[in-house]
Image (cartoon, rainbow, N blue to C red; front, side, top):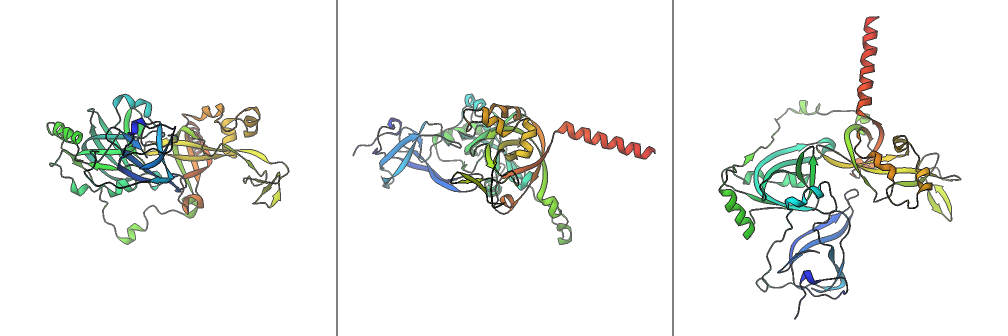
Length: 403
């Protein structure tokens, strides 16, 4: 029976037969809604590593958070017939990775399209930290296979499930592999950040890992482990920790830099001029579900999903009309009227990139009940504006004292 090697596949047919090993498998989900939309795999044959054997289809690999840089991926059809082979029938390695090279790093900074596998010798394990928004992370330091010290930040479950107790300071070296990470840059420091698809492997039984263990065993790589253990408190003390009112819970401020626009759901909508709720067309007429009325003059309004970051990580904020219009000094209606393609990101939005802003966020059921991470902006302040307000308030206090 003849098989086609992965590097020979193309999009001309949908009845390919391949013989591969399943290296990794995970469920992919929308990071904003949590909705699962695919089961993804890394498959490998004797010659190549590929993305997710009879009858398969080859299609272009597009979209964000791709674990490999290949231009194509394989799609299972209803007629695809996977057959498990006995171990030893083929000489396919157990694991396959696409490790980032030094010449790739700069062009992958903050790139969410193609993720990166990174390998190195573990030199430091930090304790779990809770950052703004309640997110948990753990910083780990590695000496990469190209001899550069880098920080890898584990997020949420990966940070919590990493068992530091099994790693002894004098038992190394520990060669650790992180898959599907994003390359991050804060100030002049380059690091890596795990994603929902990331996996961790320590001292895998592979020739490359063995060569790295031998190489780093000749270097002083004593492992430092720092585990945070909060002091015990009495119940009477715990009830005062981070106590706040309901109003304080629903409103908070964050200082962050805008570094991108997420246009997956567009940047504007047709809304009701009374309550600003999204209007739905029916038989050519727009109606407001909130006001239960026909809208004679529906308005085009902003709904811009901006990507923001600080030194702890990045997330998405939503700017609605009341915030976006004065910030851009124009209306959504004007932009739509002069644009030939309203699906693309308007050039006017370029003025937002790089802005350092203090955002006042409004949390709602979408965040608190459903656990979604798109936060609505209720008010904004520029840092220099805040300094001016503080200065003016100080002057008023001094004048009051002098009277």
